[in-house]
Amino acid sequence: MSPLSVHLPALQVVVPLLTAPLAILLGQRGLAWAAATAASLFSFAVAVALVLQVGDSGATSYEMGSWPAPYGIELIVDEFAALLLLIVTGASSLALLVAHNSLVKEIAEDRQHLFYTAWLLALAGLCGIVVSGDAFNIFVFMEISSLATYILVAGGPKRQALSAVFKYLIMGTIGATFYLIGVGLIYMLTGTLNLADMEARIHEVSDLNPILVAGGFITIGLALKAAVFPLHGWLPGAYTYAPHAVTVFVAACSTKVFLYVLLRFDFFVFQGNLPGHIAQFSGFILPLAIAAALVGSAIALFERDLKRLLAYSSVAQIGYIMFGASLVSATGLTAGIAHMFNHALAKGTLFLAVASLATTYSTLTIDGIAGAAKRMPFTMAAFVVAGLSLIGIPGTAGFVGKWYLVLAAVEGGVPGALLVVPILASSVMAVLYIWKIVESAYFSAQAPNAEVQGNGRSEAPWWVLTVLWGAVLLNVYFGLEPSLPLELAREAAAALLARP
Amino acid sequence: MEFLGLYNYWVFAILLMTGLYAVISRANLVKKLIGMSIFQSAVFLLYISMDKVEGGTAPIIQANAPDQLYSNPLPQVLILTAIVVGIATLSLGLAIVVRISEAYGTIEENEMREMDEE
Image (cartoon, rainbow over all chains, first blue to last red):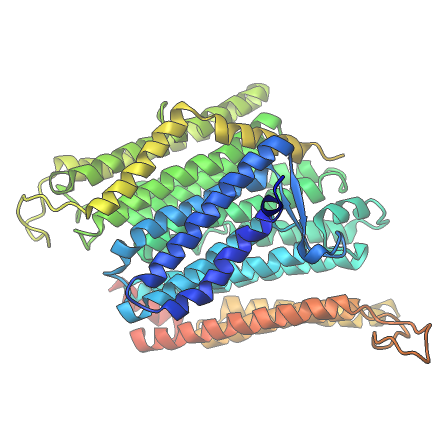
C-alpha cells in the first residue's frame, strides 16, 4: 500500500474543508466555482479509491493525528461508509457541474464565491459524518454540514426560502441536540465516545435504563434530521425553495447520511447490548416507514409544484429505505442500503432535469411546463427516464432496490407478503404522479398566458444537458449492472447484523 | 436525599422542556430562537454535571501535589465545542430572522404564513 492511500479517509474531509476558505480568496469570475468543482471531483476520486481499497482489504481505520483509538478520533471506512461516500461526493460533483449555469439566475454574482464556500463546508461535513468513528465528532460534522446547508437553502430566490430554512434550522437543531443528549448519557456510563469501544463497554454497564433512554434520544434525533415520517416537516419547504443545484445535492445525499448514522447506532452500538432493542426498533420504525410510503406518495399525487411533488416523493422513498431496515434481515438491510444509492441516483437526476427545465421556465408547476417536451425535448426525455427509475421499472436503477425490498418482505411469510401491498400501492401512486408531469409536458398545449411563448426550441445549455444525460445513463447502467451498489450493500448489511 | 442529589439533572430536564415548549408554542421567531438557545444550554448543563468528581479539583497536574483527585476535563472540552456550535446556530438563526423581517416586514410566523398564501 502506498503511503498516500493510507491517508484517504482523512483526505476525504480535509480537501473540501481546506478548499472552502480558498474559494473565498479566489473571489468572483468563476474561479471559486472551478475550485469547488475540482475539490468535489477530487473527493469523488478519493471515494472511488476507497471503494476499491475496501473491496480489496476490508474496512480501513485511520488514527487522526496518530492518537490510537479509543483515545484519539478514529476514522473508519467500511463497505457501508464507502457506499455513502460515493453517494455524497457523486451527488455533489454532479450538482456542482451544473451549478455554474444554474445559479446565475438565482444568486447575485458578487455572492457566488461565498455560496461555494458554504457548499464545500457542507460537503466536508457530510463526508466527515460518514467516515468518523467517534460519536461526538459525528455531532460536530453534523452541525458543520447542517449550518452550511441552511445557508445554501436560504440562497433560494423566493422569500419562502427564508421561512423554510428557519423551520429547517429549528428542527435540525432540535434533532442534533437530541443526538447530543443521547451521546452524553452513553458517555456518562461508559466514559467513551468511540463507537466500537462504546459497543464493547455497554456490556459492563449494570443499569441499562439510561442506555435505553439514550437509544431513544439518538433514534428520534437522527430520524428528525433524516426526515423520517412524521418528522419530515422541514423537508418539502427546504427542497422546494432551495436553488435548483442545491436541491440536487441536498435531496440526493443529506437525508441518507443521517439514515446511515441512525443505522450505525441502532445496529452497531445498541443491537448487542439492549435486550430486545432490535425488535423495538423494528416495531417502531416499520409502521412509520409504511405510513411514509403511503402518505408521501399520496400528497405527491395532489401537488402541482414540481419540486414540492418530488420532495414528497422523497419522503415516501425514505420510507422504503427504513422499511428495508426495519425488516432486520440480511435481504431487508441490503435492499434498504442499495435503495439509498439507487434513490439518490434517481432523485438526483430528476432534480437535475428540473434544474435544466429552469433554464427556460421560471414557473415550475405542472401547468407552467405544459408543452415543455416540444421546447426542451432532451431535458424532458431525461426526466422521463429518471422518472421510470424512480418508479422502479426493470432496467433502471430504481428497480433493483424495490425488487430486493419485495424479496425481503416475502421472506417473512404471509404477514411479510402483506407488507408488499403498501409498497406496491406507493409505487402505483409514483406512476401516477410522474405521469401527471409527463402528460402535461408532452400532451398539453401551452397555457395561453404562459411566460414562454412560441414553439421554437429553447433547450438548456449543452453543458447542462451533457451532465443530465450522463446521470441518466448512470441510472440505466446501474439498472442493468447493479453489482457495485448491491455488493457493497450486502457486505454492509452483513456487518450491521454480525454484532454479538 | 436522592431527589436533591440529582438536583443538576432536574434543572437540566426542566430547562430542556422549557426551551422545547417555547420553540413549539411561540409564533415570534426571535422567541423561538430564545427557546432553542435555552434548549441547547440545558444540554451543556448535563455534560458539565457529569464531569464533576466529588472532592475533585481542576485537572491541572501540580508538582507539589502529585496524587490529587481531578474532575474529568473531557466533557468540558466537548461542551466548549458544543457552545461554539450553539452560538453559530443562534447567530445564523438571527441572521435569517433579519432577512425574514426585510422580506416580509414581520417576524410572526402566522402572519408570514398568511402572506405566503395570498
